[in-house]
Length: 211
Image 1 (cartoon, rainbow, N blue to C red):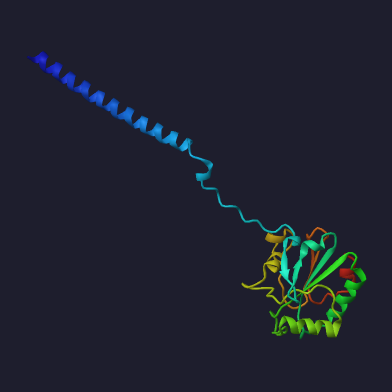
Image 2: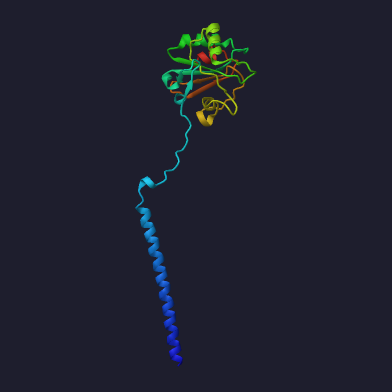
């Protein structure tokens, strides 16, 4: 009788072991099937990683609206240095338009000047694009490219000025635009070279010697 009970217990243990083996095998088979399904997924169904946003490597990658409603594409200036200036019509430095025009005329074979009218300082550029264009032409005979009126600092700063003012963007220097007629000089490849404050005159040796 005792032997019979032992045999019965062995049979139950054997059945339990078999059930565990079957459950484990089923689970492994299910995993293999799912893995096989992933392997056969087509590339078209895959989710591509988001493209990384990269900063412009040179000013040549920028295009801006021109004062006359056209477009200024900085890529057109490859091979020449570029002097970028934030301008205003009612500033104590407005007279620098005269020097900028002379600098442009004397060096236009190797230099382009681009003016950016801005009303960020003392409300000294209140006019419309049409008014600014007329003022520059009538009073200073400006013939170098002039961009449409923008903001050059703050949360609404134009992207090109964000690039000009931050080393993390231009790779060379940080600059804070403190007033009208601040200047940036860039090389023939559109890379940043120097930053000049308002007091530096367009025809000064400080600028001319670097052209």
